[in-house]
Length: 248
Image: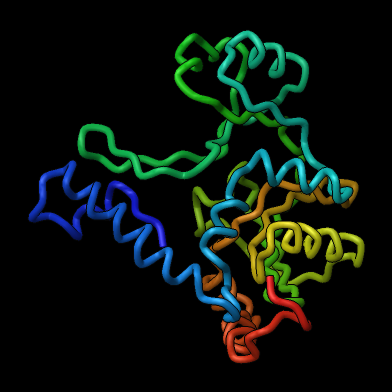
């Protein structure tokens, strides 16, 4: 359970500060009671979802587990960002976390975008940014793991960020090498998650490159396109209430 600015609409009869106060009490009151329950399997526990949602932590864990991670820099220092783009170009910029955002009343979003040295100015100092060496990929993978079941889907789009145009995609179910599967399970185990969606890029040599973990990532559209029994796997895990003898 998380309360964000848009949740204040539930308290629209209150002033903004009062609504923020009320939302915090709900989060830490009802949320605290739920978190205190001992025994049930969460898919996933909200606190562990939150802990796993930090990209720098994901990158560090992925590297420790032997996954191939693109060169990455998180900084708000323009000089360091310029040095990184010069040394590792081509480079893409990514958000550290998706956040609701409007400009002049129009909802905005952001994708992985190419960035060059000359574009970086002092406005970067306002907040940390994530810069990453671009993977020269031939395809993308979205991998859903539910308990110990693995569903891997190849996404062919020709796009830098496939989320920008779902009509451009074609999909294929693929098998993953055991070493990769074991590493992805290791990431979930580290964060104490029962399930997670992974984004990987595959280069021309067949090497798998870590992009990110979405602890509560989307998968419904993949089930529709591929026929993989993802929702059944989620239901089965919840019914069994355990993850191979231990609870995350």
